[in-house]
Image (cartoon, one colour):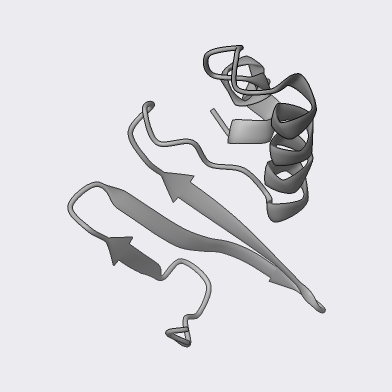
Length: 77
């Protein structure tokens, strides 16, 4: 795991098209802004794990599974 220190309004770039910006820091909470192409799924870990569990329940017969039906709130877009 790469660990980087950033301050508010500073960013990290991943590849050519993903930018993660520290938007706010309040106590032990950090707010991140994530800029990524629409075809790159972005989820909080607990949401991603729930999607994975649901996809395992529904089986591989459903193309895309639940992840393709994630709401804009989950993906941040």
